[in-house]
Length: 131
Image (tube, rainbow, N blue to C red; front, top):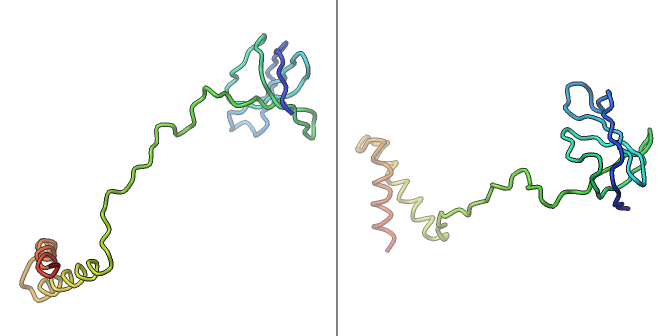
C-alpha cells in the first residue's frame, strides 16, 4: 500500500546494510504516519518534504521504500537501438554469391590473384552470374 506523508526527522545510522565496501547507507526516517528505515546511496529527500512511499515489513522492523520519481531518467536513456541497414539477399542470390566467392577463392589458391583481390573478383563474378 502506498502512503503520502511529510518527513518529520531523518537520522543517518552508522551501519551499512550490505557491508562497508558498498556505498549504501541506512537512514531512520520518521514521517507524520510511520517510522522506518530507508536504504540508499544518495539521500534525495529532506526534513519537511512530502513523500510518497510504501511501508514494508522486514525481519528487523519496517522499511520505507520511496516511490519512483517520474522526473528521473533511466540509467541508459541516451541509448537508442539502431536498425541494421544491411540488405539481406534472398536464398537464390545468396547461393550465387557463395558460388562467386568459391570461384574467386579457387583463383587465390591457384596463385593467380592476391588475397586483396578476392573481394573485388567475387563482386565481379557475382555481377556476371546474377542476371
